[in-house]
Length: 142
Image 1 (cartoon, rainbow, N blue to C red):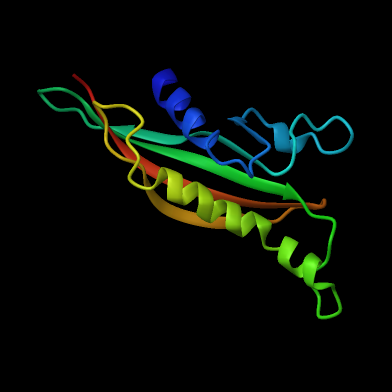
Image 2 (image 1 turned 45 degrees about the horizontal axis):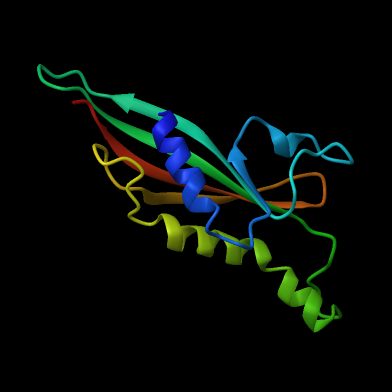
């Protein structure tokens, strides 16, 4: 698992718009002056893993949740400036940039490729705009 995480982290560092990327250990829940991220960011971790029991090598499916977030302090209303409107879509643009890097990416040679399977907006009570994107990959025991 460590090899997979390190490969994904290395791939995310290629996206210059991201100011912070890391394993998700709850950083986005520490909002305020002590929030341990820089904006915009992407944090990820295993969401779920399932395994089959066969007579041969065990096969599995791994789901990884990527949380892409930015501190949003500008509105996107009819009266907002053109710059504010453009900036309000920054998180969606990052989700697409991340997908361009990760789609069909194979973080480890013995396992499958990352396939995006779902996406949802996370509703928050603060000024953070956040989307969770789930990727799935197969795991192959050798």
